[in-house]
Length: 254
Image (cartoon, rainbow, N blue to C red; front, side):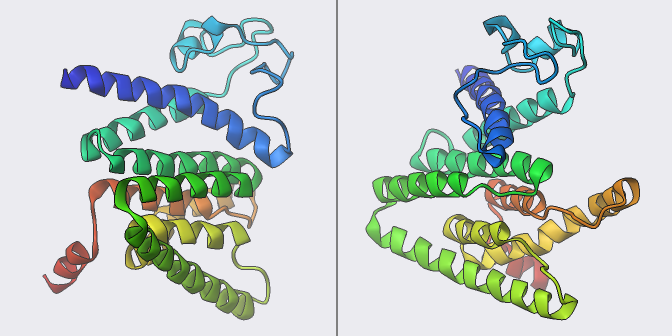
C-alpha cells in the first residue's frame, strides 16, 4: 500500500508540474493560464490528450512535436520529474497530515516561481497572493489562529530583514541589488520555516547559486542572475530535511 501511495504522489506531482510550467511561463506575459490550451510554440499545434502525459509523451514522441517535428526542450520532462520527486518526498516526510497539504502548497508556489524567475526574472504577485491565501486558510484549519499569528510575525520579521539587506546592497553597489519579489518571497519563508531558518535560506541559496551564477556569467555574458530559484531550492531543502535551530546550534557547537 505504501508503494501505491508513493507512486500516486509522484504521478500527481508530474501532472501538477506540467501545469506549473504553463503557469510560470504565462503569468509573466499576462496570458491566461487556461486559454488557449497547451500548444506547440513553433507551429501552434494544439496538444491532444496523449500528447499531454507528463514525461511519457516526451519519450514516446522522441522529444519532438508530433506535428512539426521541432525539438521539445528537455527541461520540460526534467521539471515534471523534479515536481514528482518533490511531491513524493513531501508525502514521505509528512504523511497524510495537514502539514502535507501546507508543504505541498508552499512547494508548489516555489516551483512556479522557479520557472517564471529563470525565464523572465519575475516572481508573479498572483502566485504569492493565491499561495499566501491558501497557506493562511490551511494554517487556520489545521493549527488554529494562535499559530497563524506566530507564523505571520515570523514572516514579517523575515521580510523586514530582507528589506534591510536590499537597502544596504543598493547603497553599497549604488544600484538595485535585489528584486522586490525576493523580499516578498522571504515573508513566506518566515511564515513556513520560521524567521531564523528563513535567514539561513539566504546563506544556503547563495552557496547553491554561486557556482551556477559563475557558469551563467561566463556563458551568457550577462550580469543579471535571478536569486529567487536559489532561495526556493534552499527553502525546499530546509523544509524537507527538517533542519531547524536546534540542528543548527548542534552543528555550530560541535
